[in-house]
Length: 255
Ligand SMILES: C[S@@+](CC[C@H](N)C(=O)[O-])C[C@H]1O[C@@H](n2cnc3c(N)ncnc32)[C@H](O)[C@@H]1O
Image (cartoon, rainbow, N blue to C red; front, side, top):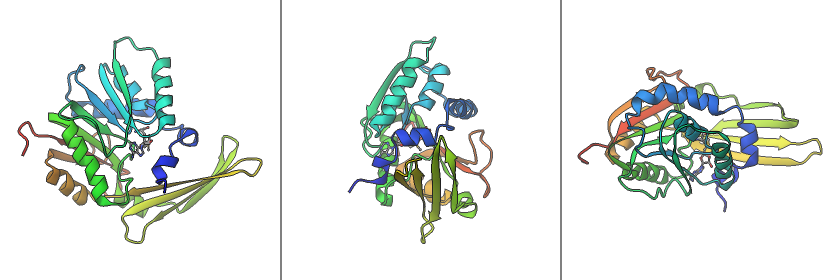
């Protein structure tokens, strides 16, 4: 059976999420930059890079050795086009890799690994989601930094809009959202209908972690200097924060 994340990140995703653009990526990264204490020529991985908006922003900020990993061929092709279309003053090596986030093919390599815009918690089993974090740990060089930008579970549960619908680029889009009975996942079904009545349906199912759960896993894996924030600018995490930013370091001397 094909998993939801193998089907939901194609051309239609690019259309529906067009507002999640490079400008937003630039602003988020600018706010985050003090937490990425890498020399500009050290390698940085954008894990689940999608169409490359954060890679563009990182290149603009002078990073010269970038890697983007994603499972979606369509989004990687879009990333390639965007990166080629935008000129850059500084020479920058960018490697785009098609791979599953559970199998990051690097060890002790990156100064920073970034997982941005809810690109985590996609697997049904907690064990598999943990494998992703273990892979990040392995891929970081000692002293390297991990940035995880996820949904704040409490905010999502308390502010869930069960349904909305409207027109988007000439098509009718209906979103249905629910929290699973165990409270652990948010699920979304998106139904898109065009003028001729053709329908497409997409699903998303994302594990929501409490700050305590996430901290415990990261610490168990070996991460240290863990900070949890409510946004890119380092604001404290509060129940009404829309985001949960976890920033942690692989120690110089692994535990
Ligand atoms: C919500 S999007 C975020 C993309 C990008 N980080 C951004 O901010 O625009 C999630 C991304 O995860 C990718 N993805 C989904 N499942 C994956 C997997 N198992 N392994 C690697 N990438 C995956 C999707 O293709 C998509 O690009």
